[in-house]
Amino acid sequence: MMGSVAIPEGAHPKVICLGLSALDRIWRVERPFAPGSEKIRAVEHLTEPGGMAANAAVAVARLGGEASFWGRAGDDDAGHILADGFAAEGVEIQNFRLFEGGASSVSGVIVDAAGERQIVNFRGRYPADPSWLPLAALSADCVLADPRWPEGAEVLFRAARSQGIPTVLDGDVADVEVFERLLPLTDHAIFSEPGLRGFAGDQIEAALSRAAAFGCRMVGVTQGADGVAWRDGAGLRHLPAPKVQVIDTTAAGDVFHGAYAFAIGAGLGVPEALVFAGAAAAFKCTRPGGRAAIPSLDELKSS
Image 1 (cartoon, rainbow, N blue to C red):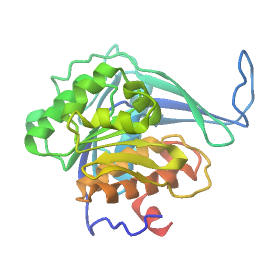
Image 2: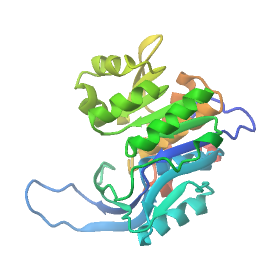
Image 3: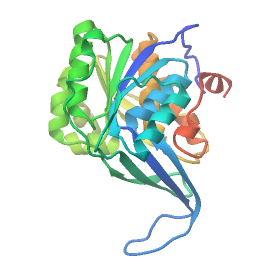
Image 4: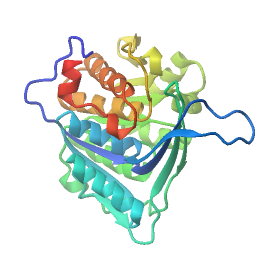
């Protein structure tokens, strides 16, 4: 599935992922809800840690990188489950702070028989101030952030830029002002389709051009089974997605971003990093669950 892409032997890039960590409660159903009020039966239910940057950090760890997660949660039951989940994956969490009196982020995820999902998320309640982050001691091969903590992402990206560390933005749905704040500090911006549409409209080429105008090295958009479109110095390009039997798309975008940051940190170029990320995300979709289905590097190599 990885094609001709080869991660350098012995590469263990150090990647910091900053942003959302949420407790996901996942229900698998045989069909989506119809319009209006309705009760349907779930065929499976599980609870597992999730969140965009959080899942990206786990992807980095499983692929063999040195992953750190920087973020916030409440000092509540969900927050401690999240912390334990990182520890079990070998993700460093010295800068994952559980705030007394805060409330952790929790998501409800409905997955239908086609593997597509709908998510409702409580963003959590905790301080936005990022002044406690140890930016003076920043050391990484790549940093990644989602848009859920823009104050933290801004100071991390600014510090990374000052050291020449590549910055990767997970462009999920967010206010336009958040992207206008972060894109000037971003080297690699990879949007979801809803995220790009909300920021710059429905026309992919024009929307990517608008994002690129902020000075990013590359801007892209993941398109599910249609692959990824991106713009860099060579113009607009497209990479098809690997053909797989889709079971569950939960966390596929998170895995894509984490694998991309891992590959950039390992020294791969943009096209090779996109192929690698696409393979990791596609493999994830062949198994049920979100974080539980994230592949290891050995699994990718043998697929």
